[in-house]
Length: 91
Image (cartoon, rainbow, N blue to C red):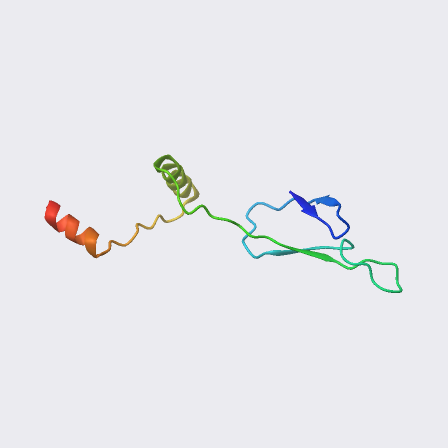
């Protein structure tokens, strides 16, 4: 991905697979210049992973297949009051 620097340039940065949200990466020498030294500080990049809130049935099926292949447990959502009433009426 491309990250803007304080100088207005863009820096190419690769986020490793499996990186979790709120992970902070330190890019040495890409930050503010230090006074009286001529060197530069570090630029810190915080990763923000966005999870979709709505998915369609095909996406859900693919995610469930992925979880099954990965060996992850698939938890079924808990039934609410109205779901229980609906089940009672149908049976």
